[in-house]
Length: 101
Length: 127
Image (tube, rainbow over all chains, first blue to last red; front, top):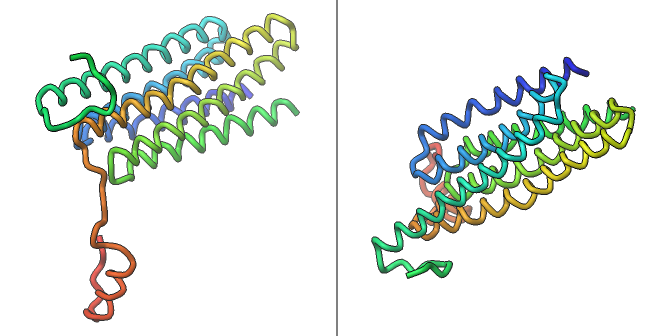
C-alpha cells in the first residue's frame, strides 16, 4: 500500500507538468490563471501524499489547508483586478457585478 | 477490504484528474477550459482525499485520534467543495467583463456541412 501511495504521488506530479504548457501558451492571461488554479488544487492533494510518505500526516494536513486557502484568495484577487481594470478603461462595458465607483 | 475501497477511490480520483488535464489542454476556448478545471478538480479531490482518510483511519485502528485526523481531512474536502466552484464562477465573470468572446461555429453546423458536401464532391477536411 505504501508503494501504491508513492506511485500515485508520482503520477499526480506527472499530471501537473502538462499544465505548464497551458500556462505558457494560453492566449489570454485568464487562461494562465486557470492553469495556476488547477496546479494549486493538485498541489493540495499532493501535499497529503507527501505527508503519507513521511509518516507525519497530521502536520501536512495543516499545510494542505493553508495552501488551499491561499490558492482561493489568489484566484479571487486576480479576477477582481481584471473586472475593475477593464471596466475603468472601457466605459461601454457594463459590469455584471456592482463595483465601487 | 478497506484497503481495496481506498485503492479504488484513489485510482478513480487520479483518472478524473487526468480527464481534467486533458480537458484543459484540448478545449478551444477559455470558458470551456474553466468548466473542465473546476468540475474535474473538485470531484477528484473529494475522491482522493477521501481515500487517503479512509486508509489512515484504518491504519490507525479507528482510535479517536485517528478519527479526528480524518475529520480534519474532511474539512479540507468541504473547503475545496465550496471554494473551487466559487473561483470558477468568479474567473468566468472576470473573463466576460474583460471582453473574452466565447468560441462559436456560426456557419459551421450540420445543415451547412451537408449542403456543402453535395455541392463540392472533393473531400476537404474540416478543421
